[in-house]
Image 1: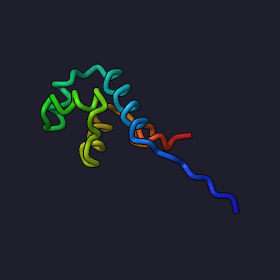
Image 2: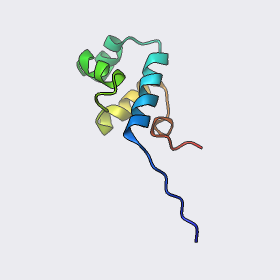
Image 3: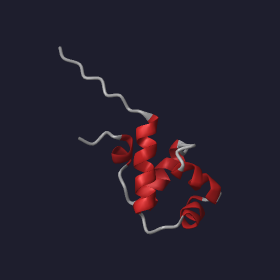
Image 4: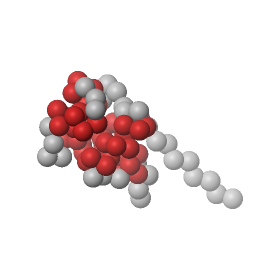
Length: 76
């Protein structure tokens, strides 16, 4: 049998998330309002200081119109 191990690193997910936030036409304030969070929290996502909770992450992917698989690095 052949097993492949996929290493999913937080820093890589944070980088992809930051790129998607920056590529969107939405401001940090607009994203925060849609998520019901503080704009400073979105800023922390951009600085890669913090990664959203799973429910916030799912909603953020919807807002940004991006697949969670893409952010997680699961797409081949």
